[in-house]
Length: 99
Image 1 (cartoon, rainbow, N blue to C red):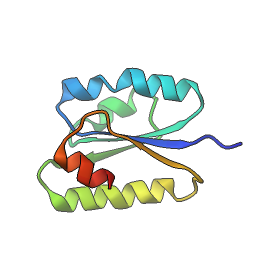
Image 2 (image 1 turned 135 degrees about the vertical axis):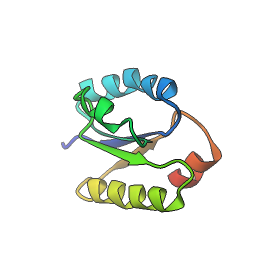
Image 3 (image 1 turned 90 degrees about the horizontal axis):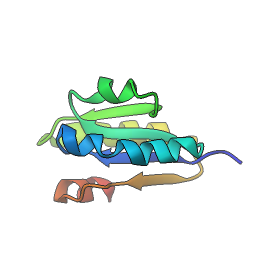
């Protein structure tokens, strides 16, 4: 059985994004492969945790940035039988991205 690929969508400010770490750690310890979609400028910090296989940064307010993130996420998910997106911080833009 292959592990699931789970993406965490957390494009809020740094403090809120850091609150996703316990969730990521829990999922990582259970063998899931993880991606994080976060605000531009935070990616290297989260890659350094070694919890995420992929970190995708978005520029808040840029529709083009979100479209590029969607394509990147689709590519990462391409070889996965199950796609899971978790959005712990509910916002209108996050809801639209998740759809």
